[in-house]
Image (tube, rainbow, N blue to C red; front, top):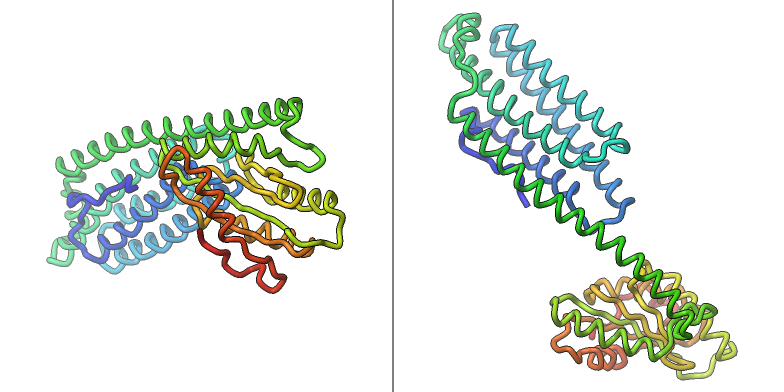
Length: 352
């Protein structure tokens, strides 16, 4: 989503400079997307933010160096050059301070976006067009001091463009802040509910702490519920199915325990459900997960259990096409069962 949209009022009339401004605005937009993306973990967000800040800082420095060279070569008034350089220096200082203080700033998103809008208003709509106008007048033979003192500053059209941008920013930030807060609250609620559910299931006998897996009855209930929910919300539902129908060197109960524990250790979300469907069959239910995501999870599982015995794995996933899609999903996973070979652990898993 683009928060900053290029407006013709932003044009300075100098193509090289306008292209630099467009590229800088693109960096701003990417940073905004990173800040407001709710679907990443805190560690992933920190790494993404660092990359985005570094990209913005590096690009700004390169652009500022180019602008300052343009001013020197054009010979415009030194007073304008000093003001221009101070704005460049202050941008770098403010951006660095925001990054260093991010842990103690409760609303880094809003403060940073507000700062960038102010920068666009002050610099791209103000001092840069003034620089270009003075450069043209000096090139035409006018004295640099006169070109500086007679410059009109930000135009009325530019002021309107800035007001429109600020209004757009306010609406976007309000909407994104509400969405982000709702997503975080929902994630906390899901985690809390999962913990409560785990404790209740353990008391009711539907979850085996030794195996770290649910029983077949709970799996059937969850499969039916998640299929109906996925059908209503048009969200994907996937499944990983494991079985070992041939004899193993391990005792059956020991192999079952080793498989379920290894699989449970690879599941990253509290909403994923590992269940025993029999003494030689284990399933993993993956709500809100498309097929390719389930295949990646399946590759982790395959690597974790490949040495345990001659196991087979099947992976299936889709957006449920009916409320009773759970039975179809289980059948698809069963029909895609293939041996997990040591040499094929990293190979693509079968599609449903």
